[in-house]
Amino acid sequence: MSTDSPSLSTFQTRRDLDKYEHNGLLLYALQLALDIDDIDSLAAVALTDGTNDKKCDLVYVDHDSGRAIIAQGYTSTKFKPSAPANKASDLNTAVAWLFGADRDDIPELLRPARDELHEALRQNSVRQVELWYVHNLPESEAVQEELNTARSSVRAQLEHHYPDAVVEEIIALEVGREKLDRWYATSQMPVLVSDEISIPVVGGFSQTGDKWEAYCAPVPASWLTEMFAEYGTDLFSANVRDYLGSINSDANINNSIKKTAENDPARFFAYNNGLTILVNHIVPPTEERPVLKIQGLSIVNGAQTTGALASSNATEEALASARVLARFVKCSDQQVIREIIQFNNTQNKVEAADFRSNDKIQDRLRREFAAIPDADYRGGRRGSERDIVERPANLISTQTAAQAIAAFHAMPNIAYNETRRIWSSDEIYAQVFPERISARHLLFCYSLLKAIEEAKLELSKIPVGNRTSAQGEQADFFRLRGSTILLATATSSCLETILDAPLHDSWQIHFRRNIAPREAISNWRQILVPMLPFVGQLKDAIAGYLKNSDRTTGSLLKFRSLVEATRPALGAGPYADFGAEVTVG
View 1 (cartoon, rainbow, N blue to C red):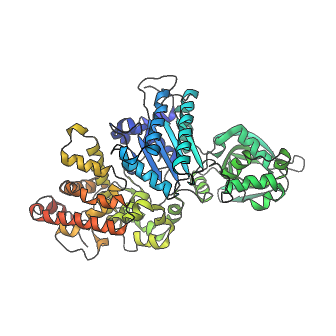
View 2 (tube, one colour):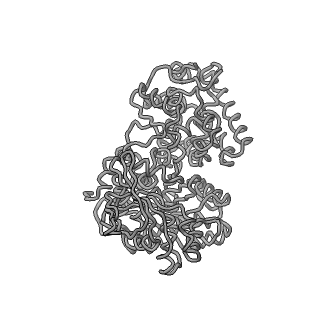
View 3 (tube, rainbow, N blue to C red):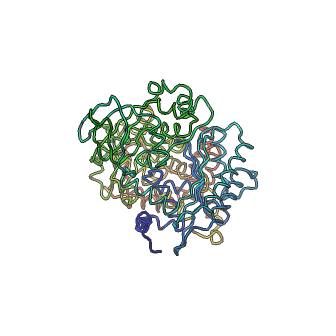
């Protein structure tokens, strides 16, 4: 379908998404919106699409950010004025099955996603539920009305089944051409609002630094509400997240902001942290002209303050008297802009990894990876602005690498449920990235997880009616959340059997030759084939979401015993071929 949409034009160049067929656009939208490096790993976890998916293509529970995204996708081969509204209403069906149906009635295809969602709700780790309808056509009011109905269904189901849940916001989102283009533009150019704006300020001052200049001054809260009324969430184009909403709770910071504006506007300046705003041009005020002039506007830090003020019941008089400290920053260096955005947002989902990017271990790994063929490892550093929308084929995602290392070294719970702690906890970071880790060993772990993800994807493409009973059992296992991580742990636990040699230091193992990631993945694929029939032994650990160490240990022992039993028959075949490619130290 021909298009004048820059986001869709770029999507059409993404050959790496072809393998996901009609789900490719849905994954592309997630990558744009969530700033995901490794979309393949997310797809391996979140896609639910199949012959009996109950109108639900994807369920993604992000435990770190507290978001649960339920999505339906549609891709038209011909241009139409809008997407079919009945596809949006399908989300009502998805909501009914995911939230309301009895577990025993849920199709096996959808049950793992449903179970993870409900477990997250019981654990109060979901604060925002989002319904997405992703398509490649213009957006319409008819579609949004259907989505609003589905949102009401979610609210009713939560009130009935989880009245004490901490869900603060339920969002119904039509992601068509307009929104895709806006997200794409944000990834390319952080300041979307380009107008010239005058701001009344008193008592400000200028500041300059390395590749940036700024003007700092208190601004009236009423000015912020006016900007929000005029530009909406475009104000936050450079922010890592839009306004999250507020609930009537003293513990919710957005609600506290509103109360202060309504009841204590004179104290607002003292209570509030202030805002950081990216601009394209600054003209400081003078004695003759006490007005700050800026061109371009994007609130980097302060989306919650702005949104809370805009939704408060504060009077015009209160908003005019309340003051907020604002830093207007001009910078033309793209790397510095990225760092301004990162370091001004302490709730960025990869904030901890960003701060580890200058760690001496990550620095050494980057230098070692320079010698590995066709591999791009950045060790927590962000790439260019285009890397998210035009992902380099050889990029080794830092997040996925960390998960792979944790899984390989018998930490599947950390790898699947607590990825953020790898970066935020000094103790866990030292366990996953110890001094003795090498780039060759990191590649060894990473390529195992990628080989498992590829095996899962290939299996999912076999029509259900064409699968053998063994393939059906394997597909059942891979539908379980955390299955790829657990299989990586299980495979690692069998390495002494596979190699027929003791592993005195598992951190020293790597491929004998200095090979590219693609070849490393191929090496793992040959030994996965004889091991896949045993994955049913791992289901008990998955039932505990990898959090029950006793269940996990028991499942791994059963799996390993079966692999050991096959060693005499396979020792001269794929195991020996794999062993010839590996060195244990």
